[in-house]
Length: 125
Image 1 (cartoon, rainbow, N blue to C red):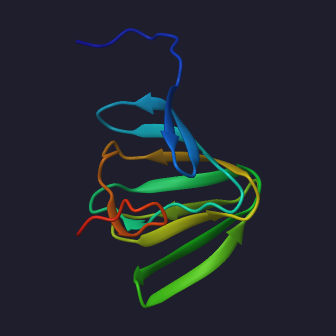
Image 2: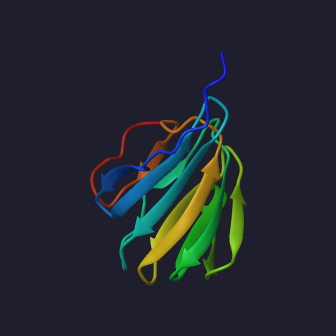
Protein backbone atom coordinates (compact mmCIF):
# COMPACT_ATOMS: atom_id res chain seq x y z
CA UNK A 1 0.00 0.00 0.00
CA UNK A 2 1.40 3.38 -0.97
CA UNK A 3 1.70 6.05 1.70
CA UNK A 4 0.08 9.36 0.85
CA UNK A 5 2.20 12.46 0.47
CA UNK A 6 2.30 14.35 3.72
CA UNK A 7 3.85 17.39 5.32
CA UNK A 8 6.06 16.52 8.29
CA UNK A 9 8.58 18.02 10.69
CA UNK A 10 12.16 16.79 10.64
CA UNK A 11 13.24 14.64 13.58
CA UNK A 12 15.91 16.46 15.63
CA UNK A 13 18.58 14.18 17.09
CA UNK A 14 21.00 15.75 19.59
CA UNK A 15 24.65 14.73 19.25
CA UNK A 16 27.70 15.67 21.33
CA UNK A 17 29.06 17.59 18.32
CA UNK A 18 25.79 19.40 17.50
CA UNK A 19 22.61 17.90 16.05
CA UNK A 20 21.06 16.39 12.98
CA UNK A 21 17.65 16.89 11.41
CA UNK A 22 16.34 13.77 9.71
CA UNK A 23 13.94 15.01 7.04
CA UNK A 24 13.55 11.78 5.04
CA UNK A 25 13.53 8.16 6.16
CA UNK A 26 12.21 5.50 3.81
CA UNK A 27 13.07 1.84 3.18
CA UNK A 28 15.29 3.02 0.29
CA UNK A 29 16.97 6.28 1.30
CA UNK A 30 17.43 8.84 4.08
CA UNK A 31 18.06 12.58 4.16
CA UNK A 32 19.59 14.64 6.97
CA UNK A 33 20.96 18.07 7.73
CA UNK A 34 23.97 17.87 10.05
CA UNK A 35 24.83 20.91 12.19
CA UNK A 36 28.38 20.57 13.55
CA UNK A 37 29.72 23.10 16.05
CA UNK A 38 33.07 24.77 15.32
CA UNK A 39 36.01 22.65 16.46
CA UNK A 40 33.95 19.49 16.92
CA UNK A 41 34.34 16.32 14.91
CA UNK A 42 32.37 13.18 14.34
CA UNK A 43 33.72 9.68 14.88
CA UNK A 44 36.39 8.23 12.65
CA UNK A 45 34.03 5.68 11.16
CA UNK A 46 32.97 3.50 8.30
CA UNK A 47 29.73 1.95 7.12
CA UNK A 48 29.54 -1.69 6.03
CA UNK A 49 26.51 -1.14 3.74
CA UNK A 50 25.48 2.51 3.91
CA UNK A 51 26.54 4.80 1.08
CA UNK A 52 26.23 8.55 1.51
CA UNK A 53 26.82 11.82 -0.28
CA UNK A 54 27.24 15.18 1.41
CA UNK A 55 26.89 18.81 0.33
CA UNK A 56 28.27 21.59 2.53
CA UNK A 57 25.84 24.52 2.73
CA UNK A 58 27.46 26.60 5.49
CA UNK A 59 30.91 26.80 7.09
CA UNK A 60 34.11 24.90 6.33
CA UNK A 61 34.48 21.17 6.84
CA UNK A 62 37.69 19.16 7.06
CA UNK A 63 37.00 15.72 5.61
CA UNK A 64 39.41 12.93 6.59
CA UNK A 65 39.00 9.79 4.47
CA UNK A 66 40.72 6.67 3.19
CA UNK A 67 40.61 2.90 2.81
CA UNK A 68 42.76 2.09 5.87
CA UNK A 69 43.36 3.96 9.15
CA UNK A 70 47.09 4.27 8.28
CA UNK A 71 46.47 5.82 4.85
CA UNK A 72 44.09 8.74 5.36
CA UNK A 73 43.87 11.87 3.24
CA UNK A 74 42.32 15.22 4.14
CA UNK A 75 40.58 17.95 2.20
CA UNK A 76 38.56 21.03 3.04
CA UNK A 77 35.01 21.42 1.74
CA UNK A 78 33.29 24.81 1.55
CA UNK A 79 29.70 25.78 0.72
CA UNK A 80 28.61 24.33 -2.60
CA UNK A 81 31.13 21.47 -2.55
CA UNK A 82 30.05 17.84 -2.37
CA UNK A 83 31.68 14.47 -1.72
CA UNK A 84 30.53 10.86 -2.20
CA UNK A 85 31.34 8.30 0.54
CA UNK A 86 30.93 4.69 -0.65
CA UNK A 87 30.38 1.86 1.82
CA UNK A 88 33.65 0.79 3.46
CA UNK A 89 35.37 4.19 3.15
CA UNK A 90 36.79 5.36 6.50
CA UNK A 91 35.87 8.99 7.14
CA UNK A 92 35.52 11.76 9.71
CA UNK A 93 33.96 15.24 9.54
CA UNK A 94 35.72 18.05 11.45
CA UNK A 95 34.09 21.48 11.55
CA UNK A 96 36.72 24.18 11.01
CA UNK A 97 33.84 26.66 11.35
CA UNK A 98 30.31 25.95 12.49
CA UNK A 99 29.09 23.85 9.58
CA UNK A 100 25.79 22.70 8.09
CA UNK A 101 25.71 19.97 5.48
CA UNK A 102 23.10 17.92 3.68
CA UNK A 103 23.58 14.18 3.78
CA UNK A 104 21.66 11.80 1.53
CA UNK A 105 22.23 8.10 2.01
CA UNK A 106 20.93 4.62 1.71
CA UNK A 107 18.53 3.69 4.48
CA UNK A 108 20.90 1.95 6.95
CA UNK A 109 21.13 4.78 9.51
CA UNK A 110 22.47 2.54 12.31
CA UNK A 111 25.28 1.09 10.18
CA UNK A 112 28.17 2.81 11.97
CA UNK A 113 31.49 1.22 12.90
CA UNK A 114 33.35 3.71 15.10
CA UNK A 115 37.14 3.39 14.96
CA UNK A 116 37.83 6.43 17.15
CA UNK A 117 35.57 8.91 18.91
CA UNK A 118 36.18 12.09 20.92
CA UNK A 119 33.09 11.41 23.04
CA UNK A 120 33.77 7.83 24.20
CA UNK A 121 31.31 6.17 21.84
CA UNK A 122 33.82 3.79 20.25
CA UNK A 123 32.74 0.18 20.02
CA UNK A 124 34.57 -2.80 18.51
CA UNK A 125 34.18 -3.40 14.76
